[in-house]
Image 1 (cartoon, rainbow, N blue to C red):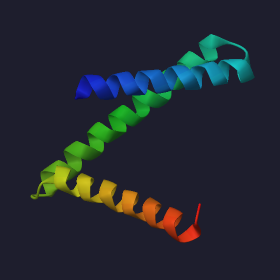
Image 2: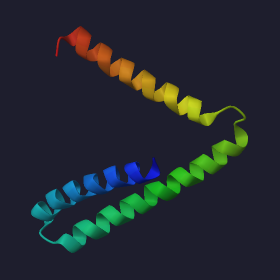
Image 3: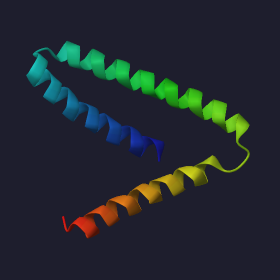
Image 4: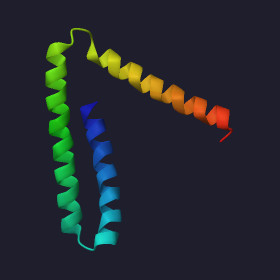
Length: 84
């Protein structure tokens, strides 16, 4: 599962990098920017996960699933009610 997520993130980063390269002009700027942002959010996620994992005693994966389902239901209802 981790490999699939990594491949998805990598392909997303390539697409963003191509767009940034067209706007800013250099591939080096795009590469450094994407690398630093990815590094920051990876460490932020690890830090938050460790801190909350120690404090919360229930299954945190269950909470993540509930949040994702709630977001999906919200988007579904928005599309159904707005007729989009």
